[in-house]
Length: 545
Image (cartoon, rainbow, N blue to C red; front, side, top):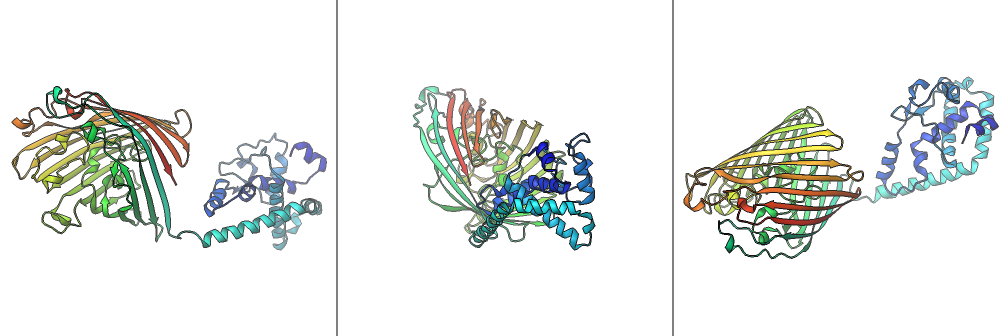
């Protein structure tokens, strides 16, 4: 509607109230769109939220020279029923439909009735009432239709509420479909003779991983998580000869549906957050890993090493307790204890006698743009067959430097940081050092020094809103020193340096669909210059619902 229209019918200021309310009413703005869920209705109301104003000067986009300025000013003073958007704008040039105008007119009538009921009818002139009467007659058909649609919407909302899955539980799902292949001339090995390396014979694969999470809350500040998982993504290590080519979402249970995670988190006021893992506890899901754009297995890096520092894989797979002090503050402190075989009552297992990790992290987050963490983990490996310091991340020697039948103790130190230079540029990185000691077995008394580091670059909204172009470069865990490194049997292991280079592009098709092509390059696999460079090409499609 234009200025000329208002001049023609000589509408009083109260009519502009109806127009304004119609143009800004959350309900009217959404009534012409089909709403099928309670959440959609709630989101519609939130997205169009309007606030009462007491002065026309509160509108940043209304100037004294505007043709409607006097009318708006009069409405504020006489009727006190004019509203604006939360960002202090009026949006007076926004177009409106007849349904929107009818809804605004109805709201205006309610305001007039309120004024009359509170003995302030002198504020409403006869001219205003006559105009409103004519408008009500003019829009009687639209008002009747609007009431009918409201009644229908209320009935549909009541039906949805009566048949919803649960009042306390949300179902969140994720499905990954991936096409991948490993390329290179020869398989990697650990010796110094390149002539005995078998050919790298790999076929392209198509695999999946499906997860269904049930999140339940009983107080609004707690969360019970039960996760169902099925996957058939086989590790690339079998064809490449090295764990350095592993994907970040690999795992194979033959697509059998299993409950692979159960935990409960709750607050002691806002100062303490507690999480109890009953099975498959993972530190990287309980604490900040300082790699926000690549930490997720479904929507982050394609590779295993590119997701976050290996220090967060300590104690992975068992039960435990994680406590965070001041979780929302600029400085927070986290302590955790995980036991990998907490459910096994046999010798050298159980909650305290089996493999376990004691973890601590100090996080400093002065701003949303800059985060840094100092991390420590003490890891005890009780069973030589399960002796695996980084859960298959890095070289074979770095994961198991002392051999089978060895109990070992490791102290892990790490520093991690993330810096957002601008809304579209984020740089993250980590570095870590592990010193391990063999307590039993043929290498009892030996020690190993292990180093690793990496950095990542994320360019957000690259090529479109929600897209991310990412580059990750680093060195996977490598035994750089210690008496075990100089032992005669290990003299050639981890003598050189492997480098991890990963490029990926996260293409956001919609809020529920992401396609991620990428290439992983491993230079000198297994920290051995005698091994050829290996490549892993992957196309991952992630559905979330």
